[in-house]
Image 1 (cartoon, chains in turn blue, yellow):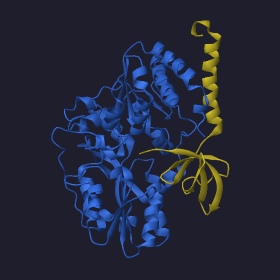
Image 2 (cartoon, one colour):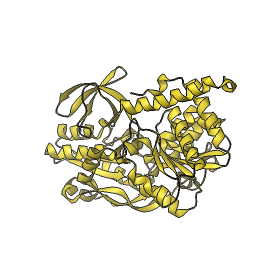
Image 3 (tube, one colour):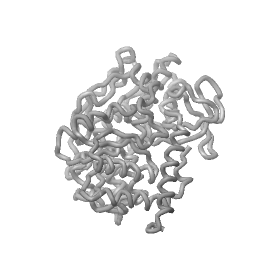
Image 4 (cartoon, chains in turn yellow, orange):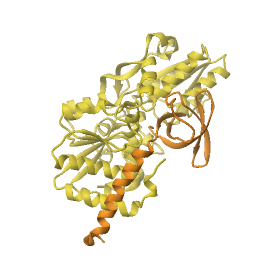
Length: 364
Length: 80
């Protein structure tokens, strides 16, 4: 059910833009945290329609982009082990590690399979009892309940050959780290719609309470995004700093309690490393003790090694909103979607890829 | 990567598995994270799992708000 396109977008969008223009008397820098928003904003041309005073900056909400190269290396090391089949989402295949990618490994004959759902990896394990099937699970809170459910399903089926290599991250601690760092000036947040479907509103309240900034949980249709921006400007006009929900057809204040329960049964918060942001306390998810036997990082000999970012690559700064993609000397020359240097150019949701594809003439 | 695709539940086939219609394409979807949904409900689907029932009343509220915008603009001659 997506009722918004039924409405006259062509008539409504100018009206919302007019309302935005009335409120945008002073500059306002808004961060869209989520990569799916970044793409939706570029694709719809919203940047070019907004008043000059409203600046949109992309944040760290692209799971592929924030996965450090060292974790890609570890997945590659796992895939190279005898008897292992590595299953993962297609988005991860082209992300460069220090010397290879999963796609290159597969081209060399590595047993690497792309799956749409983590349950497909469970099924694969059941059908291939002689192989160790390892699911390389990358994602934010939107995806983690599904990964947790797959782990529980493997346990229910009594599979002893299913493993998880967890590279999961949670969004609010990263936002806290960004705000505490203070390098980036942000006047408000367009908050991620689908992460919020799971976690609800409460985990963002510190943004308003401790940092005195507004946030609006926003949907992904162009009209949703325009309304989210309008709501942020309206908060400033009315001198309010709150977390509001624009995407109310999908997001409940309390989130999806069942999904949170399943996540909590399998995972506990753990420190995690983010590309560009470093190690952020309690911003990742590790397997609970009762699921350790399925934790590939503990079962297999795949030590983590830090990898330096490629020389000249500004992905780390782009992910924090410190630099825009065109500020990078490699952008569009040495680094293109066909031949990417950094992960922000690999993922279709990376801000470099979005700038490259839609950016020209789309500057707000 | 956090894409969520809306679809309508056509049937609940087995224990916590549903057939979901995505504008004509049908797929099996797990209801493990959304066990309370029923046939006819719209759900948001992510990596093979329904992650939320879409709320029709809330959707209507959004539409109502947009209708108010349109009505206000129709009444305003300067914006005609």
